[in-house]
Length: 570
Image (cartoon, rainbow, N blue to C red):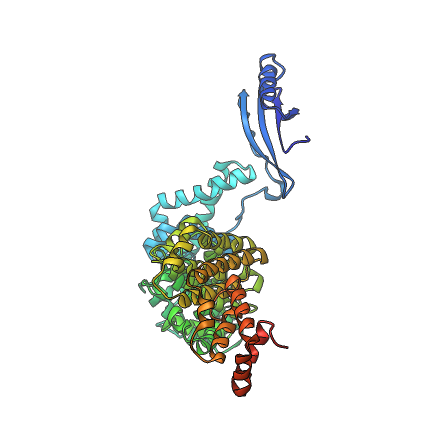
């Protein structure tokens, strides 16, 4: 169609048939009447009219349904996908894969939390397997949570999937119970874990047995932090190198991934008093202790924002820094990125603190880019997080309590500096532009009890902050110009440049004050700088000023850089 908006009429001749386009028109009334005529005359059993609006930027149509009449659509059963002809997990060993363990942890989350255990422990501890089998209802519900979505995705019968997974769970539980009865998981009180690793090396079931030994070592240990300490103790007692060491570290790493992947456990390990932002900063410090220590040495202010990591987390951090547990490092890095891209506030109730912790996270994650995450992943995460910083709710909370419009503008300039992404920069710039161009801002600046010099100094500092915010040229120039106009009004009210020119002080001192204004050091650029430059030129033309400057060569040398800055000297 020629226009940016048109209407399309779709029909279905029989209930099982699919929708087909009948006609399109730019007139809404014609489209609706035609559709009703088609339905009334029996040419279709159902009709639908949609409004199609062209987006000039993307050249794509956005569709909105205007009218739907007639027989409802017949829902078709999803066909069985050839690539998924059977269940996702077909044998007991499939339950031990990372994907399956992650799914089990989600469908049995409440039960596992009540037991204070992880999925890895459930798959390797006879006592937990026996409790789950005795629960009955918990296991049935978990299987249904898996079978129903899989049936909808693949087209397989729900009852078949439920029966399959129930049988699979029974086999897995029986396997763990049989291992317990045969004493395949010896206690660490009987022999050292290093001795067990050497004995199991080369055994066919070594991974399963060592998993049971490591999981059994956590039996009776309450609290996520205590469990982390126990796992670190196992690492300290593991064989020095070779396959026996890997035999111990692999199940420990799998347990750590599940332990630190649970939000409640992570809060216990790092400290329940930490908010979301501080918790993420502590995770980064734990994963990359050397990089964070170097940053804090260079910028001590980071030590206030990034919580210290002590005890078990510090021991784990040393191993991560040494290159051990690479899967855990990657898992924690992905978790930090995932939380940054989520809508959760980093510091609920403290918008200014959220900006501070976000800046600290940006600094620390950028320092670790290349080892944990790529720089592009870090930038994408912070660009996504910045979207939440330019919403009306956040900005309102951020500027709430500002005593003056100038303070509000200064906070918004800081917001512009700390968001990333072109669209977010533009949104933040619009907030700042709306503030500095408002009548309230100009009125307050002109009526503040401060001296004109202090007001102009604040406006100049605000202009420089805007210049550092990396805004687009258009947004930056608009805000800088608006600030310059307000500064010009303040100077005109006080006639500041004329007062400086007539002040009973030595000529070099007057000239220095005017040149600093003209260079934008003590005031904003724009009308104020232009008037100061004109007054400085007027002074320089006076013979008395030239004589005074010639008599004091040191004053001339001091003024020369300022004169060059405003274009009055080569």
